[in-house]
Each structure stands twice: as C-alpha cells, then as structure tokens.
Image (cartoon, rainbow, N blue to C red; front, top):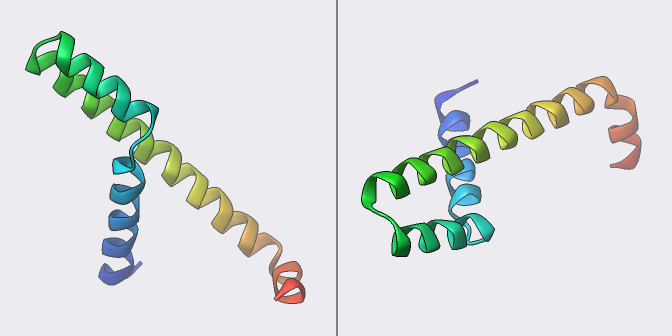
Length: 76
C-alpha cells in the first residue's frame, strides 16, 4: 500500500466517522449533560468503533473483489 493510498483511505475513514448521525447526536447529548472527560471518551470510542468496522468492511470487499475477479470483469 503506497503512502497516497493510505492517506486517501485515512481521509475517507475520517469523513465517514465525522458525518452527522446517531453517534453525533449522542455526543451532543452527553456534552450537554456531562463533563468533558466522559464526553471525550465516548467520542473516542465512537471514532475507534467506526474505524474498526469500516476497515473490516473494506478488507472484506477487497477479499470478495480478489476472489471473484471474473465476475467483476463480466459486470464491468
């Protein structure tokens, strides 16, 4: 994996993790009702969780694409 691909991948993960959704709503609610430390650790957990499952999805799709190369070429 080249540095350019790695930076692009990291950028895509960052954008996916930052898109507003239920996690952001939970962070805002926690920030309004708790202190900084609790909110920080909740946000950190959400970001690490998003990065973990997005990485697993991308690796799984890459495996499928490598395994079924002929099918993807036919579809293309």
